[in-house]
Amino acid sequence: MIGIIGALEEEVVMLKHDMKIKNSVLIAGCEYISGVLGNQDIVITRCGMGKVNAASCTSTMIDRYSPDIIINTGVGGSLDDNLNVFDIMIAKDVVQYDYDIVPLGYQPAQVDRFDSPYFVCDEKISAAIKKSTEKLGYTSYYARFATGDRFINLPEDKRRLSEVFGAKVCDMETGAIAQVCALHGVRFASIRSISDSASGEDGAIQFQKFLKLASLHAVLVIKDILNNM
Image: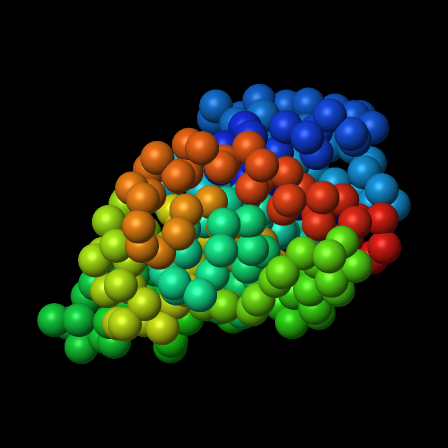
């Protein structure tokens, strides 16, 4: 079974609409919908924004459905002026930039119980995502994602994340989902369609303007993957 997690309804509603639903369960405020999409048994849910929401949802999904793979889908903010809105970003790894226990002898953003600050995504799933983006004619890149409990709105804040962590995408959930998957030994990948650029117009304004269309691009990639895995 493949688990699919998005933070916002816009990021998952089109997938739910197209699947053959077998069951729906509400747990801790999240609806877990299981069924078939493409050639795959899937379970899909909207976790809500932020790392705690994402971690709680991921843990519940793993405990109840035992997915072999979890894919995080949605939109993200660009940290690179060379990226354009609607570009498809595929996580090679992800860092939780707001996790800081450096005074205790850890590396910047290193999470307790892990040797590295970076959670590496599954190469095989990521390659399948890349293949689908090329088939659909989308511009796509592998990149490091930076996750934190804050909507990064200002160009100077985006620039800092790029300089400190070498990240090209920011979001509020991927790192938490990746951490829970790592703890449970579940294969994980993330795809984000760029909704707001690294500089220029206010990030929140762009996010609201492009959320639905950027989400659609990511959804079409997910659907292609499920048809061909």
